[in-house]
Image (cartoon, rainbow, N blue to C red; front, side, top):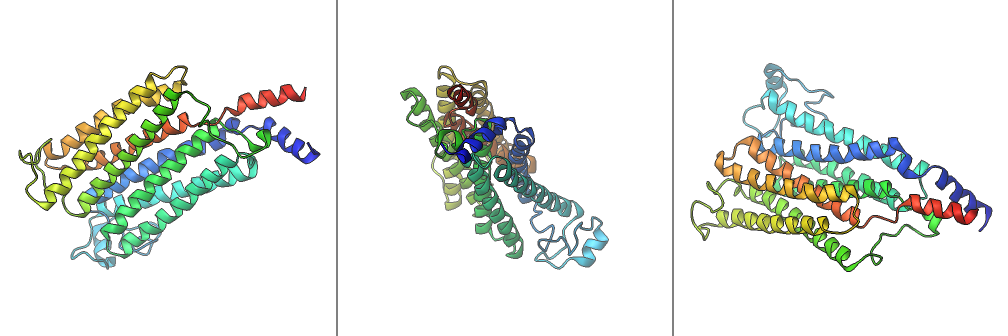
Amino acid sequence: MDSSESTAKENTIKSPIWRDKLLLTLMTIAVIGVVLQITLGGVVRVTGSGDGCPDWPMCFGQAFPPLDQETIDRLYDGPRLSPPQPHNVLIEFSHRTVGTLVGLIIVATVILVWTRHSAYKVVAWLATAEFIVITIVGGLGGAVVLSDLNPAIRTVHLFLAEIVVFFAVMALVAASYGRPSSIVGTTSKWMWGRVSHEHRSALILSATAGIVTLIALLSGSYAVWKEAGAVCPSWPLCGGDIIPQSTFEWIHMTHRVLSLVSIILVLLAGHKVWRLPNISGALRFAALASAVIIFSQMLMGAANPWTTFAEWARAGHLSLATLAWVDMVFIVALLLRPVPGRELAEASRSSAE
């Protein structure tokens, strides 16, 4: 081993990524922030606040928008026949503000990873992918406003926001259980192929549950796009009919069937993970959380027709669906986590001695 490789290894061991509290804090805030951003996006949609700011990236041509009706009426030049209300402006502006702050946090994360912990290639590239996708999400957010809230762009906007969550969670877990390439000699590898059949089976089931959960979530967005989100006034059937009676009802009930499949898969995955031997406390907590979240999501879905599709029920439905997706990504990431860098660091110290 030449001197440069030896120095890189020594520096990595002295400052392992899992001890960088600032970085891990920023990564955690990024995960929470993206979930909050998606939730606020749901609030924007159900309250009809999508054009609360008729321009982009400014709001009424200002860094901070007017919040009094008289000024809004005077400055408004958008697609509505009547100007938005102050609460619509505030909701849309809050959505944009959280998105901007989350973007800045992700930028800081990428800079910290590449400047302090470049040996951890998995973390670095996951954080970079997170930054790239959230940049696209921000641009699509502007396109939504400038295209008079085009529903197709809105659906893609939501999909990519959920992908940001995926990269954010994977980066956080990879950093918490970092495996630096300067110690092992190659880019960090996940534990696939080094685990038992039960472990691998739980991983495949959890990944499948996560994918179906995301599809069910997006199918709900599609139903809203097609104006079929509120066509079924009862639950679990649509108006008491076993077979849907219209195209809109078929779209809505397809979403409900996909949701049911995702509920079953999430419960099975959580149960299988819970029964795995020698799992970490974090993985056991995520397995338990999957049952709590998915039952809450099911009740929130039922609350939509029960409350005649109240705004809080519709926004909460999207938020809990996102949490179910986040939890499954956490489970997959923890099952796929690299061999802990702590053990490798100790092994390197022992071999050096």
